[in-house]
Image (cartoon, rainbow over all chains, first blue to last red; front, side, top):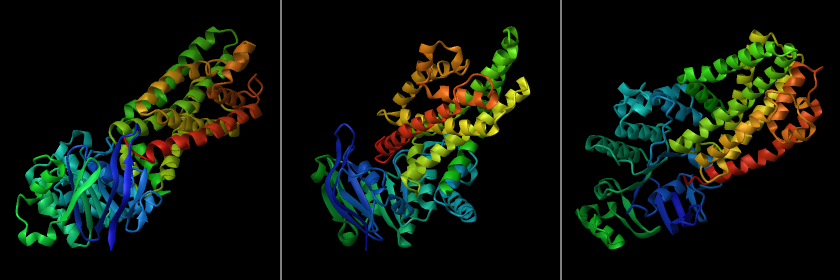
Length: 243
Length: 251
């Protein structure tokens, strides 16, 4: 079954900038799909399109068969999103941020409390539950954002550069959680700057260049013969840039 | 409904977190205004009792239109600068629910703030509304109107910080020409037409109708017509601005 279907998608900004241009791709259920690309390639815009935040200028995005534009509420019920930039509520502490995220999703209070405790523990945030988010380090804010993406137990995780700014320990913990999520049947659509992250996590990657899908290929299917450096060569071939 | 209640609760927590600022805005400032202008200066003017009755409804009007302004700005501006708007937009509810939640929250804050100032007016000046229903109706309509107005002004420009500049520019004349510190009948006829352009005039005069129906004020049907016309104009405009900026979230 298809989790994400993107057909001839064009995403534009006011002022005429085209971030994603006539792009088509498909992500199967249970797959981890990674988007690679240089800054400004259109990765975050594509993530926003899948997350229902941006309306297509042309084409369409379907998530589990639902139109991301016309059926956005239904789509949002089935996805967990970690945007690139911190969007935590500065008036609330860590626990309250998670609690209100659950309340916005109409989650019963007892379920919310259980899941908050669970994710605070998993991400080693229990000691910071009552801290104001403004006083947190960048890495800790990212962990809270990650908890928000997981806490509603979505079917699809949409992660925009999830490990940016994280130290290696937290990054490996993130990778572990993503793998566990996939083992439980979840689908992941992520963007990353790190080739090693794509190699370590993704079943398939797409290389975006100037808003177009320059190359897409499967890592998992040829895992046995996939050697380090292959992805770097593909990236260089698609973008003309050395990583 | 869950989202609307959650956003109201979140707003309450945000206000409690800055309790000193909230108390200063909702209690201390109106108390000082009512004490100085209503009680002290009011006694110095011949016919002091009538000036207090003119000025106090104006103070409640200021509460009714400034509280939604603060509440809605509190959603949009930090929402823009700290990206909280994005978090609300990712909530699994239709965009219109978020719009309604913000409007209800702004209206609710205007009503609550007005009740506090009405209580202060009773404590400081001994003024009580003659027509309680009119008071509630005018405060609710005025708060709703200014929730829509603030959303429109903040979201129509390309960025809300530009809207904030427009809002700052508009609020001064709206407050001082909007019959908050004097009644419409105190103005010369040519200025009355000018004052009628400001929605604040309808709130102030409507509240005078609630507090002192025998004293000169704008007729209540005229006040309600003013609210109806302004709401009919602003509701689609606010909805359009909201959908335009947040339905295609490019900030």
